[in-house]
Structure formats: structure tokens, C-alpha cells
Image (tube, rainbow, N blue to C red):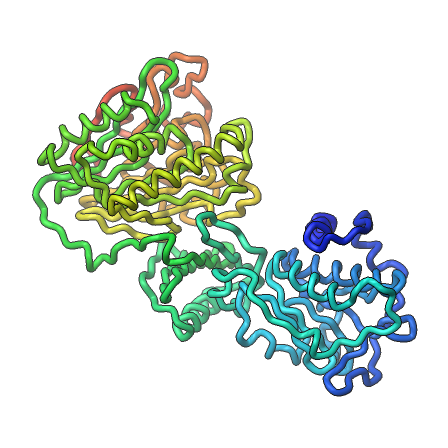
Length: 583
């Protein structure tokens, strides 16, 4: 109810209605002339809801409704009052009718309520379609987010007209069904759970968050999807969390179950906007060398202190790159020199995968520069990233650039991706739980902003792609620049499954992680992507910040080595003999 004034404003813009929206939700039900009649009100599939200057129906929404269903219910009441001289039908939640026989009551039902007899309206419903059905003395409106609610209300508003009415009769002309989002229409409604509003995940991907659900309901949904044109592509488990990727002719669905939240998350996207990770069975390779991990230092005077670039060498001679650093020529030169020094054949360098963790220039800038230098002599097989939608990107605080600059970055990023596609590189929009089997290493996507409430995340660093790497019996965790909301989410969801032998310090040590996080990881080898100047000289003095106290403890941690990036190139073989197994 608390979002009604915002919702009404949306309706005002869409329907070009000219009236005041200053009423509160409480006012919508004041002065109500309504009764819950049991008198016969249907005839030839008609339902009379207003006559004799009174409503003989009630509008009902689910007690556990999303904001969209509740807003739709109250907005409907308000629109009805506009054509009946201010008289409004009563609006209540279905909780009011627990244990009550409602079979003889005239009702307008918004979304899936506990009122019996209308289940048929939901049998073939999906998340991208809005519909309304007259079933006996119940008018059932199927909505599942604000956009669907807007569409339904506009249709009903058109039926009502503007002139004062002395009688309102719902008949077959009030029944409708239309697709408002083609992509979402490929997601069937979820049984045994409460669907929230739609989340725009960017790049044409959308997500529905289902609360109050359980693992059985999740598994039943996967089975039902399999009978409705989807095929299971992969399944993954991280602790108790469940992840599945399903494909149909033109779409990819990522289904996630988070038991600690009793929550399912369903992500749907057109197949044309993303490639898929190769299956483990397709990961055929020949071992020709030993593996390693390299931290590339990007320090260059006081101006360039941050940035992040990691190069992992696979046993088949290919490389995996995580981020890269600034869009600066000195970074490109260092990067190419490091690759050539590490390569088995400096004239034939293949990057099996290039992961971009987030949208800041000190992380993805190098990839942009590479996109404009096609003659570097390197082959990039795939680029893997997950950039959120424009609203998320443009939502900024003091730690990120202006919305206009972020918008420009998105355009630049899209242009870079198009240039890589033109040369044959795959571009994959990564989602939680996906595994990338690359030679002798496995890269698991532990997190993106799709695992928590994006409305709370006003910092772009909360959109980081987190990677957990398994290589030669040892593990590496790359949290990138995760801010506190994402870091807290990782602790809540994974806990002890964050434990890793190698750790990259979160956000260069400026924030986002502290001892509570690092204690779960319990690392032995620490990579710190920061310049020496900011680490211990400048006013930043990152080394001595309280959040980094974990790395200064003399006892109580497993840390054996801390490697500050500076302007150095640090390469560690994998497996690394310093790492103690079976801790």
C-alpha cells in the first residue's frame, strides 16, 4: 500500500488522465458504500457489481501479495470511485476470509488469492502475460508485477469510460489476455510461492524473485518447465544452494534456490544475447605445461594506484584473464609483456576466457583498449561478464562516477563487445552457479547482483562478479570490489564454502570486506591489488585501516604470504608448495 502514490503517478502518465493523485490509500476506503451480497448477481455470465448507488462486491488481494498486486487492488478501487460519484468498493486481503465460505460472494480477485474456484485462471498463466477472467461470481485478474497491473487497470479504465455510471456489469467484454513482456512470457508461473515484482537484469534479461517457497516446489517447477519445452543444460550445488540452467529454442533460464532465504530466483533471457558455458564433457585439452597465477601490478605514479589484473595460465598453454586494469597504454604494454613472458609460444597467445568483474574503468578499461587494437596477435575465445541494467548503473553514490559517465561507459562497453563478437569471440552474460571448465581449472560464478535485493544496492561495486577457482587441487577466491551488501550476501549464502587457499583482497583494501569475511575464507596466500603509495604512504594508508586488521594479526590466521601489487609482476606456480593441504 505504501507505494500507491508512485503507482498512481505511473498510471497518470500512461493513461493521460487529468485528476489529482493526492489521496492516500486510507482515503480510498473511506466513506465506502459496499456490501458483500449473497444475492444472485450473475446471469448469462454477467456479474453486476454496482447498482442502487452501492457496490455489492469486494476487491481482494493476497495477504502475502507483492506491491504490484496490492497497488493494483487499491488503484482499481480508486478508478471505480471516479465513475460512481466517489463511492468505492471495499479492498481487503484474503486473510479476512480465512475459513469463510465465499462461494456466494461477488469478488474481484487480484492475483492468486486463497479464494477457491478460480484456480483455472492460473493453469496456463505465465509471468509475461496479464489476463482477466469471469468465473461465476468472481472476476479474476492475473497480474504479477507493476507493468501487468498498469496494463490491467488501463484496460478496465477504458471499459469504465469517464461518465458517471449508475450500474457496472462485468461481462465477457471484460475478459482479456495479452503479452506485455515477450521474454517474461517464457516463464511459467511458480506454484507454492509468492512472486515479487520483475527485476531488470540488463541486456534483455529479467528476473522474478519467489519468496516463501521450498526445495520441493523448486524441483517441481524445474520438472514442469521440462514438460513445457525446456531442457536441463547444467545443474550445480554450492552448499545447500541449488542452481540450474535450462534452455529452450530461443531462451535460457537460470533457476536458483536459496534455502536460507526460502527463496527462488528465476532469470530468463533470449538465447541471442548470450552464449552458454561449454559443458564439462566438451572440455578436452592436452597438458603441455605447468599452471600458474600472476598478479600484474598497475601502479604508475600517484594517479594510478588501483586497478586489478590477474592472469591464470592453464596447463594447455592458454590463459584466463580476470579484469585487466586501466584503459592506458602503459597497462597494455605491461599486460602484453607479461603474456609473452608466460606464453609457451609468444607468437600464438590464446585467452580461453576473459572475465570482467564489474563496470569500473580500473577493471575493464584494458579490455576496451584491446578491442581497439585488433593486431595484438592474441585470440580471445570468450568474454564473461554480468553488467546490471541502466537503473542500477545510473544509481550512484560518492564512490562511483556520475550517471552520465556511467551511461557513456555502458555504450563503450557494448561497442567493445560488438567488436569482439565480430572477430568470433563469444560473449556470455554470467549468472550465479555457472561453472566454466577451462582446461585443468574450474571457474565457478559465486555471485552477481542477482543474488540480493538490487533496490538496496546503490553502489556499483555491489554488482561484482565473484569467482571461485579450482586449480591443481588448490582454490582461489576473487571477490573483486564487492561492497558490503554483496559481501554480506556471500557470507549468508556460502559461509564455510568461501574457504580458499588464495584470496584477492576486496576492493583493494578500501572497504567491502573485513575480518568477518576473511575469517570464512581463511586464506594462506593473499593478493593485494593496490599501489605501494596508497598501501602505506598516502593519506589512504590502506594497510592500517581497521577493516584490514585481519592481515596484520601475528596469530590466529593461516596467512603465510601477502603480495602487494605495486608495479611488480608476481607469478606463483600452481600447485603452490607453500600451501598446506587438509587444513
